[in-house]
Length: 159
Image 1 (cartoon, rainbow, N blue to C red):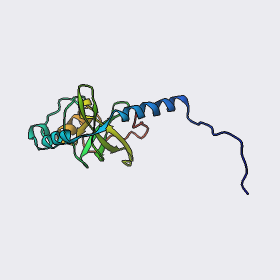
Image 2 (image 1 turned 135 degrees about the horizontal axis):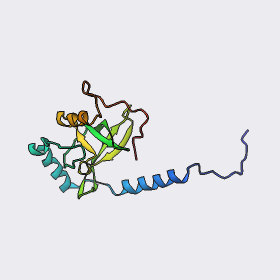
Image 3 (image 1 turned 120 degrees about the horizontal axis):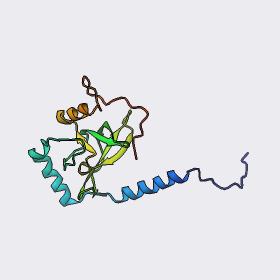
Image 4 (image 1 turned 60 degrees about the horizontal axis):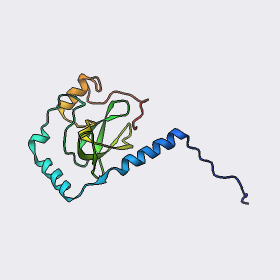
């Protein structure tokens, strides 16, 4: 037998999580799906050997590196922590620190169940190459005898 209730629905979000949701929605609304000229520029960049053989001097370095679906990558998460992930989904474009640039959807985290957009022009996503792994080892993000990310189960992955 159903019970009638006169209570109003309670907003269980606190003010900070509501503000974060608004900021997140605003940030994602600035990104848009790439158009035809941008798709052609991205395709040409995939064929450019000099771009694909970029030598990174530091993990913070910005670069217009083109990623494709399922590429293994390293991404900088909240708290400047680097973790392994894979590119998936639609490429988007939007404002970066320096200019308009591409944003790549990446799955990462312990079970690859966390998703976020990252931009190479912001220095927050790097290809999984020997040079990048060496930089990660030098800065202590991965062990010298292993290719895995350091165990940090208590970190937050998104901003």
